[in-house]
Image (tube, rainbow, N blue to C red; front, side, top):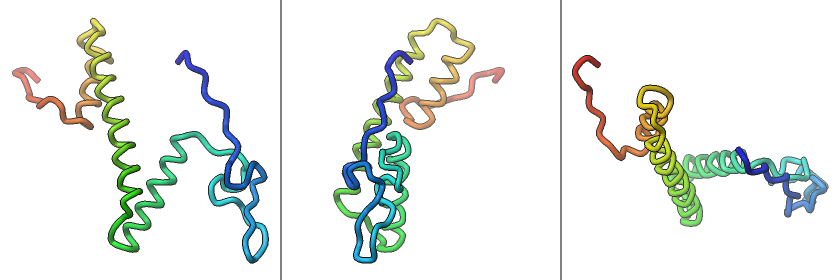
Length: 120
């Protein structure tokens, strides 16, 4: 990858201190876990998905803002997978990794029907 990974950003909730004031005193910040900096996006997405899953299990439904966030993440992932399929089509090697990439991305997207050919 040619792009540099973004530096971890300071947590806005605790302003980088890692501590969060409550009526019972200071506790670890709920957003950064006491680190003072936010983890990478993949970790934040996983945390949010788990929070939504727990809420749905407890209440039997999720809030509209959570559903909207999930749809935004789903659209971004599907767009990336579609681009990956297109890039894999541009590679001339039809037997190796590009074909495996296309099949893996298509498995998630379901863009193309997959049929067995004779001899497969």
